[in-house]
Each structure stands twice: as C-alpha cells, then as structure tokens.
Length: 160
Length: 338
Ligand SMILES: [Fe+2]
Ligand SMILES: [Fe+2]
Image 1: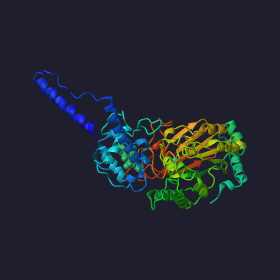
Image 2 (image 1 turned 30 degrees about the vertical axis):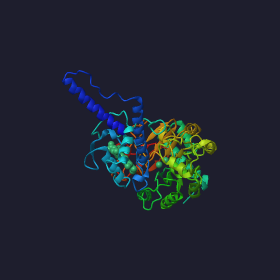
Image 3 (image 1 turned 90 degrees about the horizontal axis):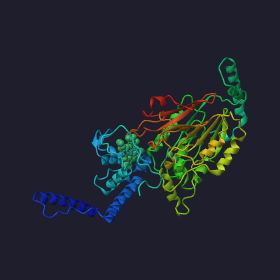
C-alpha cells in the first residue's frame, strides 16, 4: 500500500519536472518514474487480493449484523450488488449515494447491524470484494433499471 | 396429522375410479379426447381435482423472535386461510439455517399449526451439522411416496454431496459452515445418489404410464446454475426413470425465486421462500417470461411467499405464487401452467 502511494507521488513530480524542464529547453531528459517492475506489480496485486479476501470473508460473515444474516445470504458471489452502477439515486434513502452508503444501508436494515465508518478498513474491503467480482464491467453510474449477475465464476472464490 | 405413507392405497384407487367414469361420460358427451386419454380414463388413472400447498426455505435461526419466525408463522396462517383449503402441504427443505436441532424444532412447532397434513423433505441447511440426525428424529425418512386422489407423490433427498470434510479434517460445525454458503467452494455437486435411484425405480415400477406423478426435491431436476447447486447431479437418471410416464410435475425449493422449465415429459417449477429471495444467476432462463420482479430490500416481505397448486382431473393445472408484495409480472400472477 505504502509503496503504491509513494509510486504515484513520484510519477506526479516526475511529470511536473518533465513539463517544467521542457518549457526551459530540455537539456537533459527528465526522468519520469520508471514503470513498475514485475516484482512491484506482483506485490501490489498481492495487497489488492488480500483486501478482496478480507472483503469476501466479511461479506460471508454474520458479524456485521445482529440477526445472523450475512451479505452473502442474499448476494451470493456479490450478485445484485451492482457496484458499477454507483453513485446513483437510491429509493430507500431518497438521494444519490456512493456504493459505501448502500453497503451501510444493507448492514443497518437487512442485517440489523451498526453502520461502519465509511473510511474503515472493513468498508474498503467490502467495496474491494464487490468491485472485484464485477471486474471488466462498464461503468454505468446512475443505472437503476437492471440487476446484474457478477463475473462468471466457475470454481473457487471468484478471484485468484 | 395424517401420514399419507400409511394410507390405504385402495381408498384412492376407489376415488379415481369414479373420476375416470366421469371423464368417460364427458367424452361421450362430445368433449374431444385423444385415444390415449380415453384409455387413461378407462384405466382409472385420472384424478379428483384438489389443491395442495408448498412452503419452503424458512431458514430459521437459533435466535429468539427472529424475523424469519414471524414470516413462517404468517405463511402458515395464509395456508390455513386458503379457500379451498389445500388437502396437504409439502415443505421443500431448509427449515433451519445451521442444521441445529433447536432450529428444526422451532420449525416443527410453527408448522404444527397447519390445519392440514404435512410432508417434508430436507435441504442442505437442515442436514450437514449432524448428517441429518436431528432432521430424521423430527421428520422421519427423507425419501417417501404416497398416493392421493389418483396422483402418485414422491419426495427425495437431493442434497447429498460426496465427503469433502474427512480429508480436510473438518469439524461438524466447519462442515455446516461450508454448506451454509450457496457458493461453497469445497462442497461439490448435490444429488440423490444410487440408493435413492434404486428406490425410485422400485417405487414407480408398478405404476401405469398414465399415472399422474409429482416429484419433490430441494434442488431443481435440471442444470440451472451448478455454481449455486441450482441442479441435481443425477437428475438425468431421475428423468430417465420417470420418462415412461405421460406427464411428470416436479417442484423444488432452494432457488428462492420464480423459475420454470420443461424437459421432455417433466415440468419443473421453483418456489418462493419465507426468508430471502435470490437474484437470478447470469444464465438465460429457459422460459424468460416466468420470473419475478426485482425486490425492494426495504420490505422484508418482498420476494417471499407461499404457493398452491390446483390439479385438474386431466392431470393439468397451475401453480399459483401467493405473495405479500408486488412481486409478480401480470402473466405469472394468473398462475404458471404445469
Ligand atoms: Fe434455502
Ligand atoms: Fe437450499
């Protein structure tokens, strides 16, 4: 996670320097951040998958609520959670909301639990799982007319 | 409660005999029947029209006054207030959520308020904590058949998986925990397995091909969506064994949704739960018009319901989904033809 953020900052300053030096007649080519190495990419991916796994575990856990239910009772493989259609107007809240607000709504209503802090590790993990189970889907913010099945899962958890 | 399995089969044959005669009279009076159907009537195989109801998938938790307790009670009240009253109710599995005896006992207590007889088959949620011990103690054998007003009814246990726990050294709780997940990664496909296939062969052997046959299983008798065990691995063998009958009606639980299919002589209908609805998987429905609307998650009764089947004397009829919210498209509201 940390190296990831640093990497992004690096790339940013690199670009700025590049533009500035170009404006002042580039004498020596400014060096943008080098592309991530295979090792770095693998480490980032591992981090992401760990977050997705954490989300998967939470999604299947009764501990988010008080009545024994888990998200997966009603959303197997994250079906019908439609993360790629957010933000959108949500009838039960009567306003436009991001995915995390709908996750919290489902924690409070079907699960009869306590809303999570929107920036908590748990919320990030739940979002990561929902999105990863819809990888490759076109973004359709606002779409409220359809319920989508997730990516096709043949075996295993649905992610590596 | 009447135990149908102990009923005298001749009683029913007596009744159907009369129905058969009535049909012959009807055909003589100008109603057109194919040769086969007239032969059917002569063979005493037609039925006396009646209704039966289906309740399923209550998923009761071992938590006092859980919201699903109230929904099952409401469903029982609804059935008791049906007019006409069904002759009996069949419960298609998943009474409990985690296979606990206390869950199953709670279910039995609530279901005992039904004014009509009850037959039950198990679901995966009832079974894998103690391999069906508590379920058997409370509800008897999971494989049965009985005859009623000319119809042969069959119930089977379709949730048998191959042993995935011994090698992994899982505890009963862990095994149940795996089975509780619809998308279980380790559990494999369900089926009725060899013993029940043999039983089925014997059970239907003496029946005439024109006998009306109705089959109940927890999971569908066709490959709908294996990932969620919306299937029965040996359904092809079951369909083969029943292929000699003119018509077979199959009803299943587990999918918590409106779904219909027809394969050869067999029609298969999915049923609504009294716990939660399931979204449709990412496959095309064989009959895309027979489905339910999207559910409002703010209404705990939306997506749920009971169902009743009215059988007519030619062994036709319709399944009616009885819902508490506006769940059904117009076409489905009128009933699903079987
Ligand atoms: Fe179920
Ligand atoms: Fe089930």
